[in-house]
Amino acid sequence: MTTTLSAPPDARTDQRRWWALVAIGLAQLLVIVDTTIVNIALPSAQRELGMSDVARQWTISAYTLAFGGLLLLGGRLADRLGRKNTLIVGAIGFALASAVGGAATGPGMLIAARAAQGVFAALLAPSTLSLLTITFTEPKERAKAFGIFSSIMMSGAALGLLAGGALAEYLDWRWCLYVNLPLAAVAAILGWYVLPKVEAHRETRLDWISAILGSGGIVSLVYGLSEAATRGWSSGLVLGFVGAAVVLVVAFVYRQSRVENPLLPLRILGDRTRSAGFLTIAATAFGMFGMFLFLTYQLQGIMHYGAFQAGLAFLPFLVGNLAVSLLISRRLLPKTGPRPLLVIGMLLMAGGLATLTQLTPDSSYWGLILPVELMLGAGAGLSMPVVMNTATARIEPKDAGVASAFITTSQQVGASLGTASLSTIASGATASAAGLGVAAATVHGFAVANGWGAAIIAAAAIGVGVLAGSKK
Image 1 (cartoon, one colour):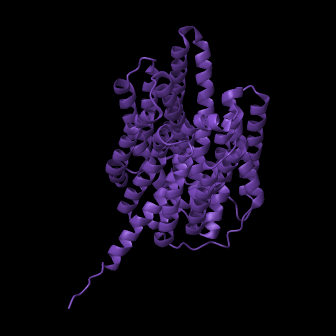
Image 2: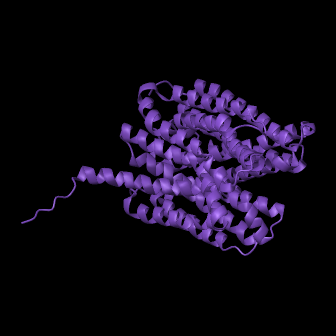
Image 3: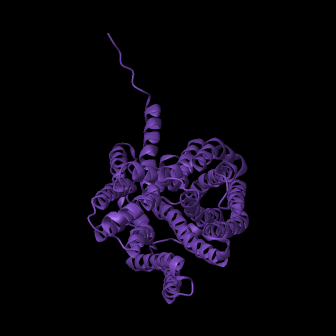
């Protein structure tokens, strides 16, 4: 007689949690990778579809505006409808939009598909982090899970460059969109079976006026900042949209303090350590996303790397990020508390960007860029798991979705502000150094902009040190 032994209930539960992390990680990867993977494909798409330069820019902006503008609403919908439901619906919708974009026959179809991707990403992204928060509650497991998740969040942009380079060079630009289909399918199907069923807080009413004010403010800000890179800060269009953003955001904040069910409860921002986490991710995104852009130009335009080779060149950042996230941060957080890890991580990233002020057309990858990428990856690996952990700690269950959404909103606004501001600074520095020659002037612009990025992150590190609480 044969007896079949099944795994103990605790073991099965443990396995289920880690499979849930796989589903959550794949869903988050969809959102982050797509911020950069399409950038690599755009030159080929522009040639094939006959896109103008304006249409090419809108292929990027359509996703960014829809994603950034709807994140807070997506977070509240996740709280109201159930995070498992919104993750699955978001993943399926994202896949369908990606399929339409990959099959695009003209610029309009591609831009519309990118906007739809942004809409579903705004529903998907808040669900991932809030599900992670309730799935892992034991401190050691939570630290490990957040280390993995933060690695995905910070390394996804570099991974998108790597994957986009390989797909664009060896297959076709359309595969930079089609690649989302298997990822979304696995995330949705696996998520259906392993994600915890979280109570939907139907009593959380949606304040549509707040949604319009908040989304309008973020869209106006992101669009104004994206136009600043090409039109300059003195443009009436740029000033108009930025001014409108300020008015809308002020009105949004005022309304949140008055309504019964605010879209963004101000109590979420009342915790100083949590606010320090939001400041960390916004300032880090400000400098780092600009760095990815400038290094991509440096590798391909100045050093003449191919698309795939340029993607491979970002691997040291991934290695540094993963190693520090998984081996160091999760072990140190219970012993040191959040403040030293946040501040030291930010200072490492500031130091890496400051080192990139030494860029020249003759700079060596092995002598300068690779060591800097390791430093930047280590800094991100030290601070980002702490951000994810502390920014979602002690959150009421009914607010978990919107708190998670605000993390991504902080990153999105920081990245948009940084890319626009640093691109404008780089252009000005390049123009002032025109006598050096095209290549030298261009790289001088990159170096100056990276210096400003370093200064912003270093200044924010001081603010984080003041805000962040002591050991918890």
